[in-house]
Image 1 (cartoon, helix red, strand yellow):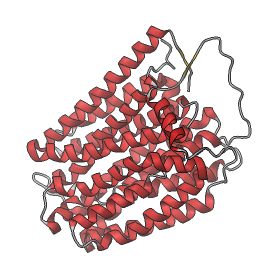
Image 2 (tube, one colour; image 1 turned 180 degrees about the vertical axis):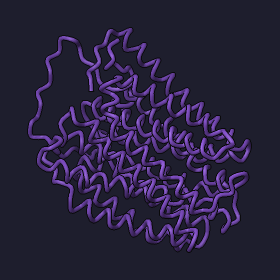
Image 3 (cartoon, helix red, strand yellow; image 1 turned 90 degrees about the vertical axis):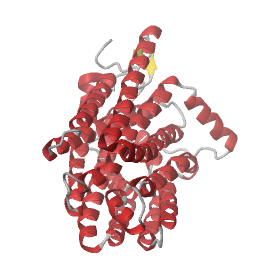
Image 4 (cartoon, one colour; image 1 turned 60 degrees about the vertical axis):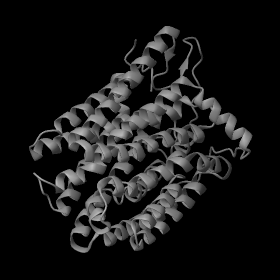
Length: 425
């Protein structure tokens, strides 16, 4: 099989099929509007991850204020990601009818408004409910963004463009956790979450001002029957099913690790202060680099090879994080982060290329699986930590990585058995 083959990534065509014509009116690096578009979606990614995981680095403080264990406090993360997972498909349907930019703008507006209310939650229950609403609002961003890119960016630049959006996710996740860590150390978790809300407001305003109006969007139908048929088509596609599972499994690792890491580092033997724990999330910068360079990784290794490399990197980081020395734990987090963001960028871009119609729904199903993985990872990772310490959380992660590798191998063998020729990135 050629290096560009993947078996778990992009669509296939017969070797004799004619090449698809290139739409030169779409955006490309260096062309009109590309930089504005990239910056706008980068900022949308920053706001999305900063809001979605705004409580993750603060879980030990939330546990302390409300007198609950990690497994209960983790619901402030799981509720947000679960809300997003449940609503991403309906929001993608709205984007098919009313436009990607309109839905993304409305979603950000609601999410940042809720973000300014979250600091005033009087108890854990109300905090969890507000976080679920916030996650549901943010559901309009991920699928609509990838569908917008698939329509407005030239195909050969798609992996890079989506990588930049994912890089914005990593910057948002990093900055949100670093900011909340230091602010919470001085003024408490409520002020920290409020500061993230204010940052997200600024990102939302800049996003709306910068994002170019779509030129290749064609409104679709909101009829439930049409939506159900589109969803059924995507779920019946073995390639897309594999990609959805890969996204969910990668996020299971990431959600579990970063939900629990604060408890490990603030406890013995490390006993780090909250500000230092927040700064640990600077390793997200590695994710920014790995996501934005995913296109080059695919060019060199093919999508299948890129997924194997991402899985191996993630697994190596999990094993290294078991060490008792803080530098080795940090190096483990670096590897986990690099592997996760690379794998996510490769899989999500493959979904956009594989879907021949209903791209927003295809992307929405991926995002739904992805955030279900996050919710599962946050919850199961916290339960495993309570039962078996950090080793339990690592065990959950290694099982998920094994799942990624197994799915990729199965897909590759199926492609070879059919004699498919896989389109290169």
